[in-house]
Length: 591
Image (cartoon, rainbow, N blue to C red; front, side, top):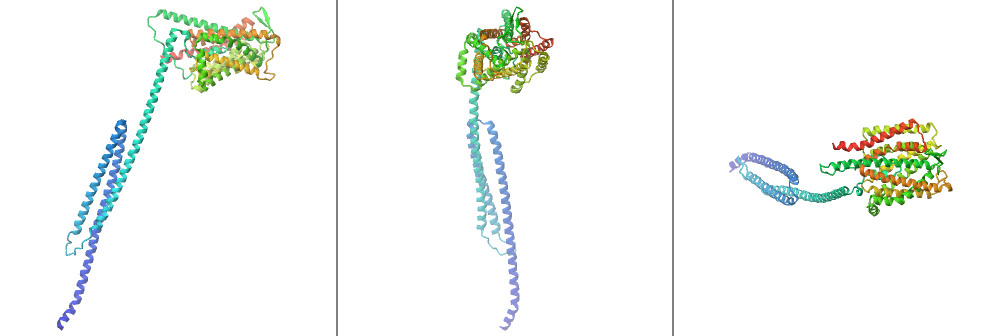
């Protein structure tokens, strides 16, 4: 018994040492197992993150492909197939989402099965099998899977929202396209109606050329002023009419056309002669320093002295005659004149009214100033200086309409400027015949040309909206009102009329003569434009300064110096070059 105890006491240290070794080995096995499980979990997490990144990239690729498909479908598909295609895309997205979800669930199940097997497999080398609870791992995997499902659902919700926004944007664009289509149809309908109206006007013109309603600006311009405007630059809105096709075998028609042109040129020349007589008669009506010898037979002292107020009075006396006879003449030339005027009053077009009244006001100022100029300097020089208006008109058209003058236009501007200097220089160098104020006369002539250019530009802006004959009638009426109001308003002593009581019969007779000459020139010019065209009539009208100087010399022996005659010739040739260029420019464009 004692011996057993001795042996037992000897064996106790050895048993304690073996227990420590077993415990140490168990701890090592536990650490190894912990590291093994931790490594496997890290690998699984890394793999899951990789799969997540791949899924995100796949979703981005799907979005990019969806955008490309949508852009292609927006270009190729029509409106009625868009909703069906969008429904297919939604179904495809849902199928892809379900497939991805099933694939992810399958992969996670595989991963969980593999990890469960690895943990439940026997441990080699006598290790103690310590089972790990698989519920923690499954719970973690379920959380990751739920988060991934939530992210995928959110992504597809965003895709659905994008599809809805694209659908609304497409519907808005389709509505805009329908609106543009309706506007295009309306524009085409208006264009067809306008072409039909122009064709009807062409047919009416061919049947009766004296009732034609062609709105050319030159007719209204040439008809209003006692000093004929010979030049009008083309506006951007001017479009040459296409010639009406005529039968090829028509020699009689050709002869008739040439005869009409010749008749028109004769009428234009007659109109220029009447206007020149008008200017000389106005010169005779205004008093000078010495009585004027008419035709070398008798002396005529004149009726009124030159001045602003007296010019207003002469203009009013002339317009009384014009307004008494102009409605009859306008009805004869254009039977629809009153319909057009009534339509103008009923339209309420403020822009058109401002242009009509503005052009009448500028023409009123131009008339008063040219009367003042003719009363102070020779009529030929006054009319020549008045021809500064083509320069102002060309520059104004360049600024307002962007119609840059050609090389011929620039040379003509230089020629007109040089001619004006030559024509006006003798009046400053020596006293004007008749004892007038040279400075006032030249300044008034220049101002008359500038204001007349304003009238021409405003008439251009109103071209095509109103026929020239009712336009002229409204202009005459407006000028009559302006003249009456100017004389009714109290003026200063320098600007008020100064009329002796004994000269009223002569003043009334002079107003009648001037009014009749105005209407006679208007009628001749109207028929000249109808037969020869406005361009050729304007070329003949460039003879106005020369013919005024010639009649001034023949009727009242008003002599001009050679330098003034040279300047007059330069101005006439320069303005004629502008008019000829207007005739040849459309032919060059057509060729």
